Length: 143
Image (cartoon, rainbow, N blue to C red):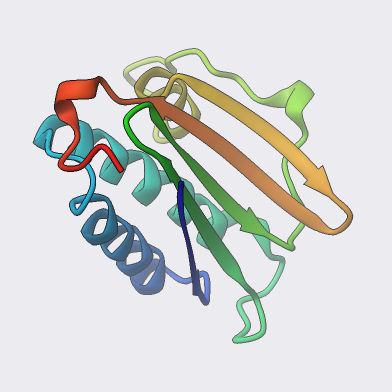
């Protein structure tokens, strides 16, 4: 098992940068570019959602945390966390919105590209936990 924690101030630029840094880490373990692309899309969406929705006001004290846990040669776990207002799991719609909708595709995309999607509340910490199985032949390393 390998574990990494990345932190950023949740704004659009930092949110994209934390996703890029995560992909650089994952490239050392996962060889399949299609999977890396899927994970990049999911992380970019999740981190930008924190930047747009988690906190009432933009402030340098706001935090975005991304924990990456890698379990070669089986799966990875991504945990995107904030200490903002959080999501209400009963109101999340995982269906694809109509073509005319301006937004609302993020949760659908994340739920389709990952094997599991969980919303967790730990004290003041809001966590989206995403898991993705990786086939044995799609790893750079088995350790």
